[in-house]
Amino acid sequence: MPELPEVETVARGLQKSVAGRRILSVRMGKTDFIDDPAALEQQLPGRQIENVERYGKFMLLRLSARTDTAADSENGEVGAASLLVHLGMTGQLAPYAAAQPYAKHTHVWLALDDGRELRYTDPRRFGRIAYLSGALLAEELTAFGADPLLVSTEEFASRIRSRNAQIKALLLDQSVLRGVGNIYADESLWRARIHPMRRGTELSTKQAQVLRRVLQDVLRKAILARGSSISDFLDAEGQPGEYQRHHRAYGREGKRCYRCGAAIRRVIVAGRSSYFCPKCQPAPRLPKQRKRRGPARNG
DNA sequence: CTCGATCCCTGGACGC
DNA sequence: TGCGTCCAGGGATCGA
Image 1: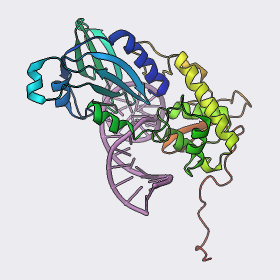
Image 2: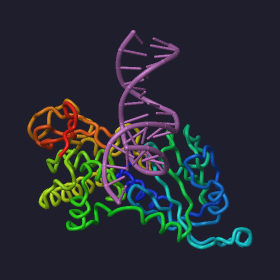
Image 3: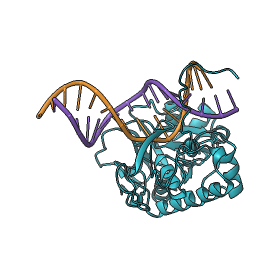
């Protein structure tokens, strides 16, 4: 499941393998996860992939202005633009020799000027692809919060401690921080010894500091390990990541905590499985509002 | 505005 | 073996 480290891994791989290549043509299968399929067909051919960046869990393929004049007169849009790609749960974006048979659930083929094809494969189609010209891209990106690797201690603390939502929900909220998903949320909360149901407003300044530090540490180490491969994540070279070997909480229900030996538990928080150590990560005193016995009292 | 619930989708695990 | 059921989860959307 691609989160920040996995997307960073794929983006770096594509930067090496396809930056500088020109897109010659586009072919599409199922398109229900593509914002405007016709725009891809009309706008991509003739453009060069100048570079590939990560933005949160998105990849941004920066595209050159178009040079072919035939299309100019038709569409009038020739300036620099971007292809926004979200891998969702099961998306893969990677180049292949055009002659190589394609995997089931391949939905987009971009023919490149060196004989290869950049293919997008996504069984669940939870991903997203959008062609966006400069202004639209800027507008799209304003909705997202801080990059967890770049955010300052002060900004992190203010973004978290000003919100009453559960800390797990805040870490997953892309308008608070861009790029954190379920695995790295649980891993950083375990390291910071914070229960996933704690409220943002409950965290001390010190706890927010610690959480930011361990989150950055986990993300950096995961990038070095080329991400986590739980079931099906593969990078742009088709290789799985290694960071799943370092998980301390995620997916470890019933197994012993590496710190204290207690059994790791799983609860649903913000609609997602959340793994934590009940001993190291003490629960809030009132995890949920208890149902009152009898009628509510006035005053 | 804030927050939680629901739904989208397919493959894999599991029970019978 | 095969069928049904459940679960995984990022994010859009809706309603309280």
